[in-house]
Length: 294
Image (cartoon, rainbow, N blue to C red; front, side):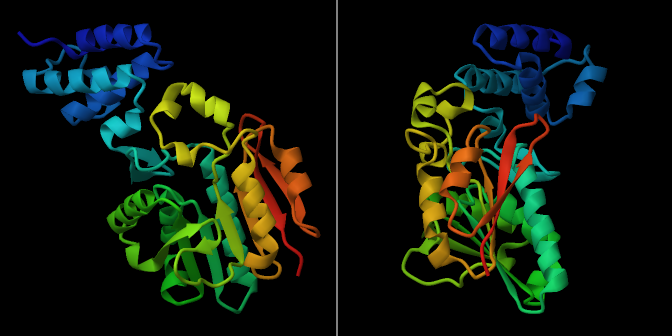
């Protein structure tokens, strides 16, 4: 006789708790729902349903992976983000809820410029990773992109990340609307690109020591997408230093940052740039908006 959903969840929750998962019940529900092709609400309503042998084997494999600390998004192969299903694997950082604030800021900035500017606008997302933010922007501004009112560039220094971004853009039907580029920050490899009017970036900002500790998903996600150097600011520092020579006059730059980094960002901002800060739902400084001088 096959084990019931309720029994399987109880046993797997205990196992994951013993291995240190911070959300053992949620992990168990999400992974079991994934392997049996149902949603979590179905599991909760059908605790007495049986789990067949094939699903049991797949679930056991998923549990073993999760017990090592591997992120659930990598095990399932996708992450839900802003109502989008973003393919996720070890080629790029998993999209975070915090980055939705960066997306909202970018959407607001682009919409305002499209309303007030007659000339075409170039938006450049630096360090696109999985391409989640580029997908969201392309879907939101599809008409402006098709009409040539807007150009959207998404770049990364990692060819693997760019491959994943390309898969996500294609999966959402917007691959032809976004220019993917291999670039070190705002310096393209082997070519030139226009100076952007809007820069959006979620750069690595975790201090190296924290990455070394490898807590949670940090031990499984690509180091180059996380490690911001000894103080977490090395890559942000490079980008900020390059802005005067790389962006259009009067450009807007939106940066996701660590909660304790805002004072350092203000001190490193280019001369004449006006910084404002947006806090996340936890009250932490999360996005810095820089208005570059005209």
